[in-house]
Image (cartoon, rainbow, N blue to C red; front, side, top):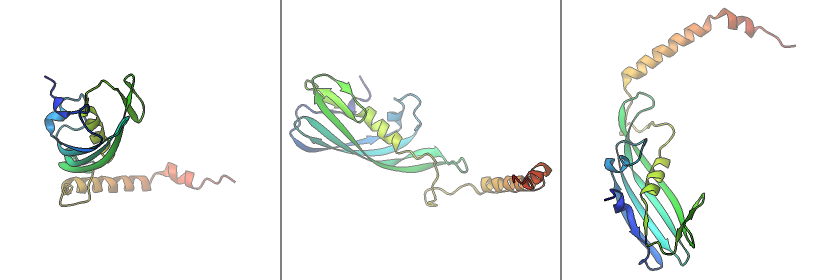
Length: 173
C-alpha cells in the first residue's frame, strides 16, 4: 500500500464550491522523498479546494517548523516556517502538465496532493536559516567569540600587507 495514499482527495463526488481539507505532516512524510532537505519537521497544511465546472483552484496554507542547523553557529533548532501557495488544476481530454497549471483527465476520480504539499513546504524554507527571535533560538556564545577572534586576526593581517599598500598609491591618471 502506498504510504502517501492518505494525501489523496476524491474529486469526482465533490459539488461545486469550496471544500476544506487538513493534513498533518511529520518526519515520516519527508522520508518518502529522496534527498529531502527536511529530515525532521512538523507541519499543518490547510487546503481550500474551490471546485468549478472545468477547473479547481487549491489554496495551500502551511504552518509549522523544521529542525535544522543555524547558519550562524551550527546548533540545531526548530525554524518556524509559514507559506501560502496556489495550485490550478484544469480538466482536459488528456493528462498533461504545464508550468503553473496541472491538467487532469475528466475520468480521473481522485487527486494525490503529496508531491504538491512537499514542494510547497520546500519552497517555504528560507535561503539563510537563522532567527533573531531569542525565544526560538539564541546562538552559541563560544562560536560567536571564536568567530570574532578570527575576524580580528584577519583584520590585523590585512592592515600590514605591503603589496596592497603600494597598489593603494597607484594613480591611473
